[in-house]
Length: 456
Image (cartoon, rainbow, N blue to C red; front, side, top):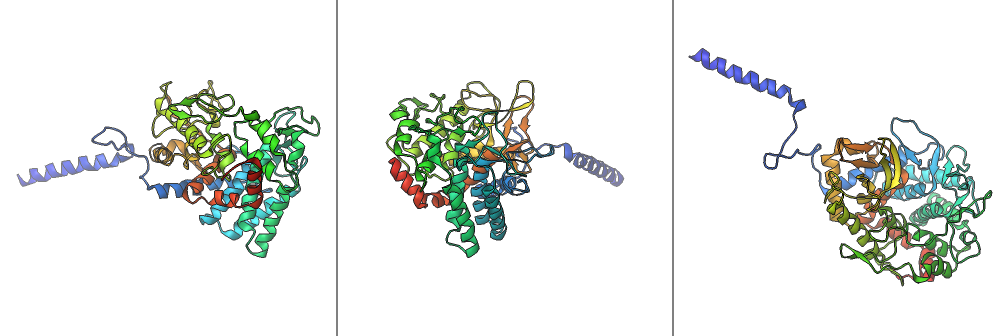
């Protein structure tokens, strides 16, 4: 009998060991809900914000173009690189570097060296009445045409870059002699932009000017879209400022920029170009407001906090409502903006996702960069994506640019500078207001806002 008991115990032990050896194929299942558990251990809100800022920062540091040290237009892991750098994305990267120093991601000395090199590179690139082109060859400093006629100055991208220059200058201007010298370089660079030229003698700013095609692109900056910062920068220039009429007659369409409609009970506030019901892609609530603080910002047309918060909540509520019944959409999986996308044939393309251009593709930058406006909803998204869809969504520079849970889960395993930068900066603005404070303390910006009739 004793031998029988020993044999039975040995048999159970053997079964247990066999089952343990198969744990690699085991998926945790919650005994109460039957749902699969997280892929990675849950983290606190603060830990998650640290992780996302630190890993996303690698885009601008580890994966920058090595000669110019500016932000690459795009980074495709394991697909090789090219020397194309982006003007606007590099402006976002300048602000991200200040965050990197303050968060201890990089040392101050390392950041100063890189900021100095970027300033020197930009001083020797092609410029068009002070403005930079959309794309620049990072090895040569020469313009890389964005399209046939877009081979000269891009005023909107230049304004995104200038926004970052102001932040760097304000951060360094009272520092050591070395820091003050770098601040002076950025001060001279942004002050050399001839904003007035880009009115072409009219009461409006134009997006492009080319030495070969002049103003043939013919794209006046009329609101509302992502270009508010362009008018703020243009009105703030000490030497090349535009008249306020360009803002009121051009951007504000002689007052016709305002909207009277609501969606999900939320007023749109302004007429979003081409998106009059739901508002545009969410980057419209990010790019101009990385430095420009919307919390107390108002003019005769809008309260800009209400504008951006309502825009974000409409986008969120649309995804929760999910009229197309896309898999995964809900309170912790939302956010439509411009990013990589999945084409019908399975290839990767690019589009401005929005409620009126919804392909079932969620862009992480949409919800993450909206965190000042929707902290609870943005954090719910971040926890879900990071913890429950980690293997799908997470790569060498943080969240991949676009994900979908339709059919076989899909991700564009790629990155874009203009999507990476806002996540770092807007998370910091949510946490400390750092970049907002630096930009808004600039005396030229305050003067420009005064000239346009803003309160802030």
